[in-house]
Image (tube, rainbow, N blue to C red; front, side, top):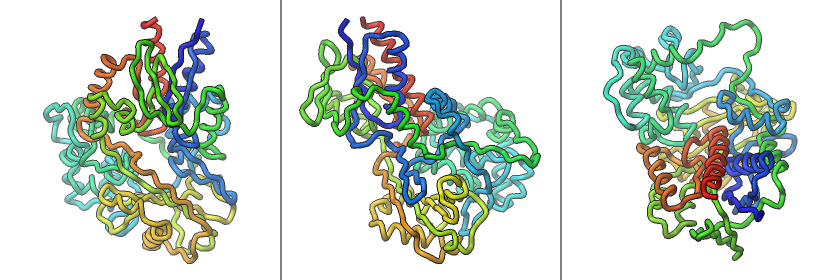
Length: 469
């Protein structure tokens, strides 16, 4: 029997996960399909990009995977990497408010207080701000809404001060966006559902988030994991598992046309590929360009994206005279800092850094400061050092720096995002049967979310092909 081709467009973690799970199903069930993964750039892994230099392990993109989201752990175990997992070093983290570092309050979830006593002791919020936040306990669930901005929801429940000083720096950092523009239902729908069930966000978290065990003297494992060799080992292992002949690099899909047998894909070198089904895992703005005559896809061009840069600085430990006991800090809006967060990588991930050295990684690129991402390297380094020296005392220039610019790759889930994506998928089912969309532009930006979307797309493709045979 002649094999049908399933094309996966994009070799980031979503596309690689899809290829892995698809190949696994084909082999286990002896299915008459073959895979072709097409990546436009000269490397695989997307935002996962580990650099090794002078004994340092530097992540140019994400530095870890969260433990509580199971798709990430599941894939790592399947790849045989479980024994190589390492947890992040635990320690004090901080929030920078009004120019001062404050310890991250204990007993909070994403900055939202669960432990009222601990919240009242915190110096992050004024007495008036605390009083306003605790009104959430008496507000009731309010009217049901299909969607609303995450910021508006939190401000209404907890007040501006707590949101801006404590919650916004944590939540906005995950999505590199503005919480007052973000969709509640696309980012933290559990917040809405807790209020609807318990009449209070604080009460809902108290009821559903387990209370941490009391200190026993034993070290508590971190909530994130990586690997001694860096996250790139996951990409390497996925590529190793895949059939080498199924991967095409440095060729872009320029046009996709529907034909009787499925789809005809034109590549940038003139090659034509015929596919029975397509999984598109590329950034959302590229999809309408590939299907340039499909009107309903044009809504994807309206999904905004932001840019972010991270600046990794390597030092001799002796250069940092006023060190801080902790793993890093996030920056609230009410500061004159241009960095948005700082990780003391040598403390959070000790295996990344040679003995006697320090590695600091800072982020820039607020929603209202996107131009900073494009500044020359030297200027960007000076901005970061200037901000760092407001809280630390760094007496020497870095031994080297690594600047990673991620241009327009951070999709913004604005209000109504889920509804728009659902409509696009419904239209695709009708007019582009066998085309499936997955990736950070759609249902979650984290690594486990992307892995889960890749696996789900495989299930959809196989069901479609089985029904259409």
